[in-house]
Length: 104
Image 1 (cartoon, rainbow, N blue to C red):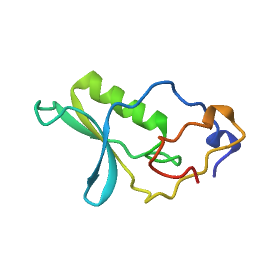
Image 2 (image 1 turned 45 degrees about the horizontal axis):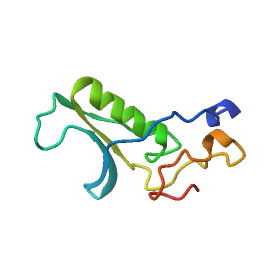
Image 3 (image 1 turned 60 degrees about the vertical axis):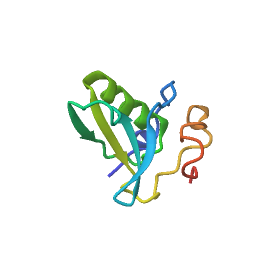
């Protein structure tokens, strides 16, 4: 069971530096090493209710990749079925990465 606090929060500041690829038919945010360098390992992040295109999720993926020389995958396992962001909360207004999924 969820409570009202489950659907509140804030948006981290920053700009994601990874890229979006289609992997096994899923749009996936990929952060970390390129094909020119060998990663130390991989991390797969399963996003929360707000989805793979939430700015916070992508910034987190970038941070993990940078700290450990990892390749980090953040796939859209929810097929675009995301919890809507609160449009009355100014902090959430720009939380979705522009140009990917609608802020449903």
